[in-house]
Length: 87
Image (tube, rainbow, N blue to C red; front, side, top):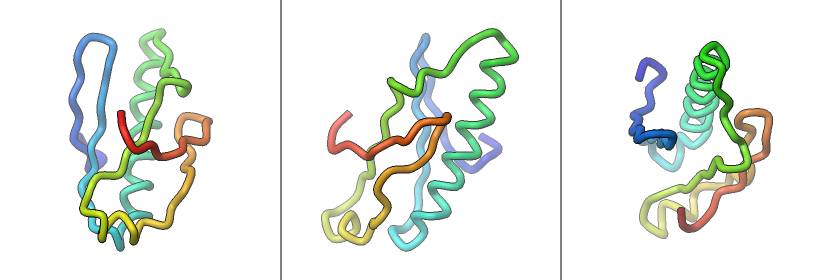
């Protein structure tokens, strides 16, 4: 995708992926926010709605790298998204 994220879509389900170092968490979050905003805008223009209640975030990496991620909730689609341990 043009925002630096990779995507996978199937029917009405979509997944966005951003690869970054633990030290670049803020850049990864910014990338996700910009990309999700673009997806939401596209959906609105096609009379669709992105459901923030079904939006999930998971950080993947070694335990050592995950311990370096200090970000808690992030703002996506006008909702505060809390990272989960399984999706």
